[in-house]
Length: 279
Image (cartoon, rainbow, N blue to C red; front, side, top):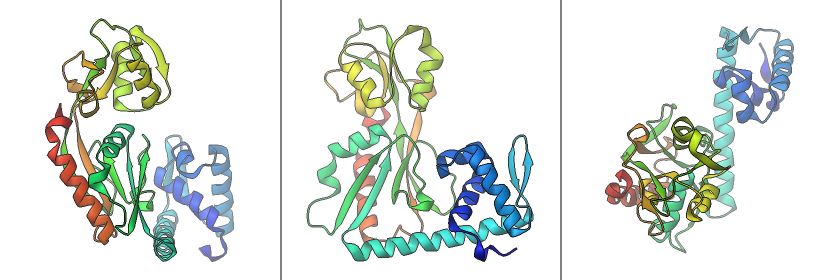
């Protein structure tokens, strides 16, 4: 097997399929459709002259050749990532990218003066998204999780428990707002209150604006709902949504001075507000 003449794009798609163990699971990771991925994997096997996958109804399992190629491609990818990081540092101030969900990012903006100040030699970049950033591929340098991470090569720290409850502008508001995002709270509303849903929204922020307009109730993390004087809590904390806050970074980045500085500040801020997070 000689991958020296294989285009990097083919190897990148192989990486997505191999790590997801299926075509469907690799769609979001690679940006390619499942049929395209299937054709490209067939072509890659033909060009290398070996079988990389055992194809089953449940997905794609790596053969011994596939597992060997995966290890080499992951090593190449890490070298590419490190080269890009070095080039970025030479080009200007270091960017410390922090990825979190919508509500944690909202909280961080509230505390921004405690996280960074002008003239410190780095630029903070906050990324609010419900999709989990791939820290291993440096989609972000620091990430927040609602459960213990399982990825390899990550350094993690448990911060505090997280509580959730239902909120509205008044106790007389009865209908529910459904959020289209695939989050535990959105799934909980669909499971328990679908018959009472009066409106839907594609993002948590849009749902929040509807809630403030008095259209319906919505589930919020207590650290967002409780401090907002425009809302009242209309339920106890929801046992089925209780979770934990974790912070993660790649083990290769944990001792970079600016990354370490931001991590220490984030840990201090969040743990200080542990009671607010727990609800």
